[in-house]
Length: 139
Image (cartoon, rainbow, N blue to C red):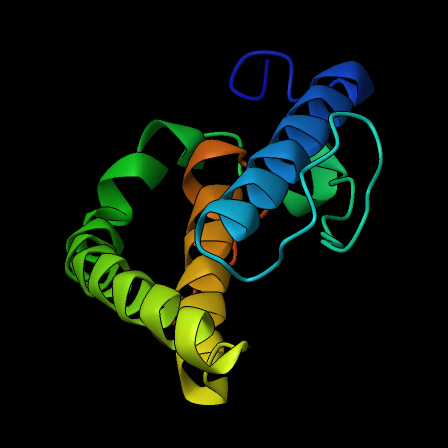
C-alpha cells in the first residue's frame, strides 16, 4: 500500500498499534516490570505513543523496501542487549523474591532496551516513521 498507493490505511495502523500495545503489555509482564496481568483490550499501565502518519507527506514511498535492511545494526545490538536483559530479569526475580522490589537500575535498563525495541519496530516493521531510531536506551 505504501509503495504503490502511497496510503497507510487507518485500519492497518489501528491493527498494528493495538497488536504492538498488547505485545508491550505482555513483554512488560514477562520481564517483571509489572505484576498486573496484561489485558487484551485495555491500555492499562503501558502507554504507547504512535502518531498516525500522513503517508503522502511524512513517508518516503520507496523506503519501506529497505528499512528492514537499514535496521540490521539495531537488530545486532538489540540481540546482544536482549541476552543481557534475560540475565538481568533472572537476577531481578531473585531480588524481588528477597527484597520485594526490583532494583531501580535494573528496571531502567530493561525498560530502556524495551523502548529501543519499540522505536526500531515503529521504523522497520510498523513503517510509521522515516526517522532513523537512535542507538540509545533513553529517548
